[in-house]
Length: 328
Image 1 (tube, one colour):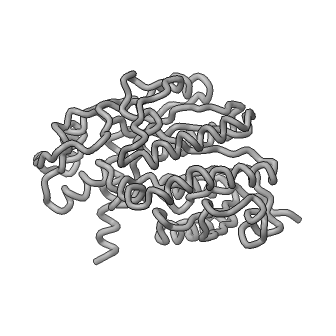
Image 2: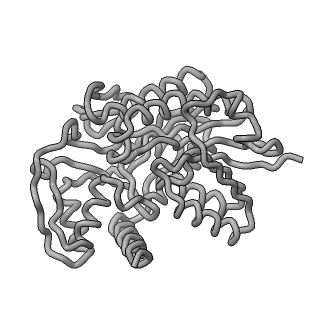
Image 3: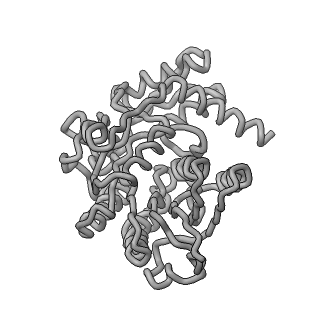
């Protein structure tokens, strides 16, 4: 008799771990495939604890996606013979600048060949598949906020291009399926527990620098804007998208837009320390503004962020402090 699972590729990563925990706490068996390039064994151990606590099944397979064919995917080496997939959440791909800039070809291969292989698996299993794309497909936008029909302004020869262009090709692969069984969301800046402290994005950088009693590194003059969304809200959006009849793409993010300097002020205030900054030269292709238009998410999914950002930052800072205490 077949056992039914949700597959989460990249399930040992930041958003993947939070998604897996949500699914398991709602009674769903979860299978994770992750090569731990940017995921962590600590997150896997956490999910094993959740499985014991909830009584659901959890299977972890440490493998990559990028070099395998659909035929290999169907072998017992990958998917146990008695497992039937109800759906696939395809999150696998380094999202940390520190990782994708270090492994650009791997990142491209995961986005392109990996996505193609997961599509083959979804076809074989006859189950829906959700691709998590990114706001990076909009590049350094000249339309604000960014709606889904905006085609973007991306530098395809820059230091970030392996990730931006990889995700754009992954979206094309999903589009070519011409079916609402193959769904795409575009995730904007996200933060919360299980985010790698060495992720390299500004939220984790700012928290670490404050905890280390260092000034906040500001690239450029700090006037560039970002919107950040707590991970619990993003997880709700992923599940809502999977359960919808839409193929997307649909933006998931929080439309509250502040400058990077203002985010630094807020995090410093939460930590009870004065703002200290160190200004550096701007990073290549760093977007000047980034903010989602979530009209489509509201209308199609009935989704919008609900979690208070300040409370989410408090939870995230407490998580980073716990990680430090564990290492002592």
